[in-house]
Image (cartoon, rainbow, N blue to C red; front, side, top):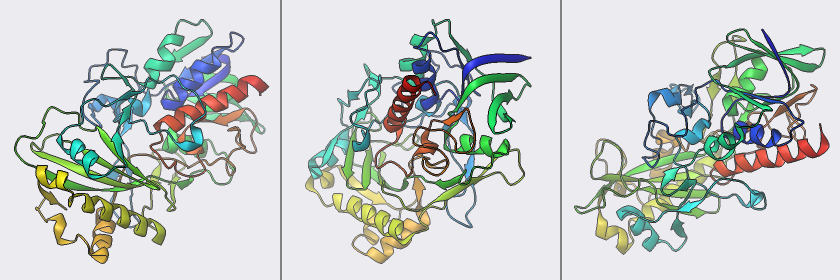
Length: 419
């Protein structure tokens, strides 16, 4: 079976929903969107106002990554279905200064209930602010909700779910077809790969495209979490996330409570200006990709995250924090955070041993290395990339809105120039 279209969009996640919607606004464009996961529908069976990274199993794609060289692989959640990771993320919207002028359709709503820990952090540091979310009336709004569903009535847009693309086909140096796992062949004039910072390089590698740099430069925002035991009387019904403390190159996020741990919250301290680089590879030529984040492999990142954690620990000295926090701990064994507070060498050692991340993968098909400034893959005609893999470096804010705005910018260019 073969399907022919003008534009084929591969991946219905954050970027793919924007791309398919915007391209299909032009009635002369026939657009097909292929998504590997299901359509969970506008009334998805999960709590749309629920906890950070709520992960019903059928909405999460299972992957493993290696955080540091020599470490064991650990699970890394990604959204599975139309809307991608906007299905499961905390919906936090932190506008990146580089993208301020690019309009988008996502509704932004400020947290109206700060919670006990969030309120204490607001009082402790003047740079803390109520968080912005992509929500309406307290309910999650996914990219599929905002962009794709209003476009489904268009006769020039076809959306196919449960249809992972396994390979791209070539006619000389031009991509002319995509083949799905069930053997259907889609032919198109132009292909836009929006499969994410792991899926996009994996597809290009599986298709034997030899553009240098594919899979290299992978980044995440490294982070460490300090568990916080709250005094009796803490607001247990507050949202998990309500406040953000942005500093140059870093971010501290108080979590009012932790699922499955009554009476506990956390401070997540993350480095947003990252220099370490990892890689997505496909050693066997097919199958699952190998993902190596290589976090904290530069001295700058170790020193940077050490400083962010030290900043987070200093918050516990504020009067507002003393009033509500019973204790702060480094691990499940109850090691007090105060045992290393003020000792930069001890904090550094703890950071290296306990680094995790904000789940913000990017930069594995970098603009200027793998693509031209408008997402066109170097060396191949008819092939474009539009997702977080395209960033030349990890954004200095949460990448959710920047990815949407990147897709807005690129689709505007493609339509204007008829590439």
